[in-house]
Image 1 (cartoon, rainbow, N blue to C red):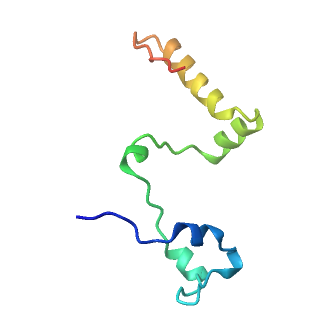
Image 2 (image 1 turned 120 degrees about the vertical axis):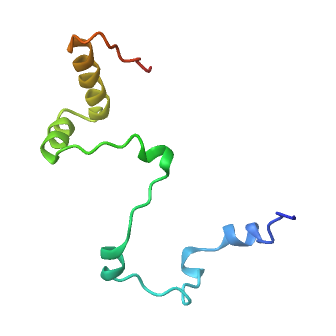
Image 3 (image 1 turned 135 degrees about the horizontal axis):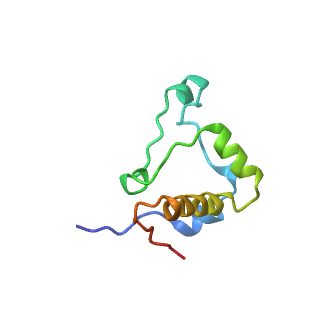
Length: 91
């Protein structure tokens, strides 16, 4: 099987945005976005957690490094839980 691309990459990269022909693509309506489904790769989806809006708002107000702060708070919670389980720190 030949996987060689037949795309003329030099010509494509030289094109300006306004030169791109979108005529064969229908416009995306509000209905399209209302029915759209977010698809996340399984390797990333397994690590997702849902936070209440008040929780994420409070952490964001703490500064740009709010994700690091969330991680630190969770590590401290584990350390202080008293069940003998320790989290493996990363970084």
